[in-house]
Length: 98
Image (cartoon, rainbow, N blue to C red; front, side, top):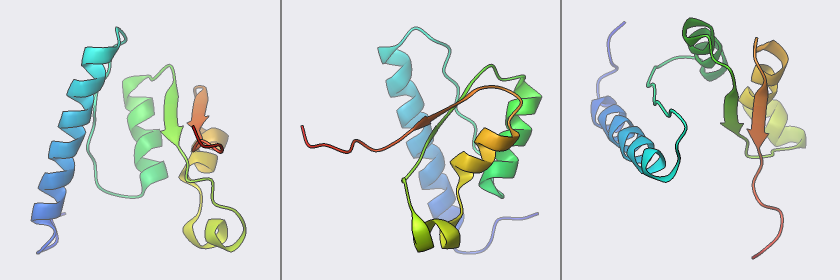
């Protein structure tokens, strides 16, 4: 499957951002940190990659949507929590101001 015309720059920018953040995290922690960039359904691709890598833990963020927003946008984090073959740590946004 090819890259849709017009999205090439956006995809390259996303890959560069991923690489930047992975390098930054590696400088701050001793755990092995890897970034993977794939296109497709987020939950399905994360589950496939976790299986391929025999992942020990998935760490995912959530926007913490509720109600209609959650119904319309779905919940990748919830899908991963239900279907993953390893523990899933879901990180929510901070609810209080610093």
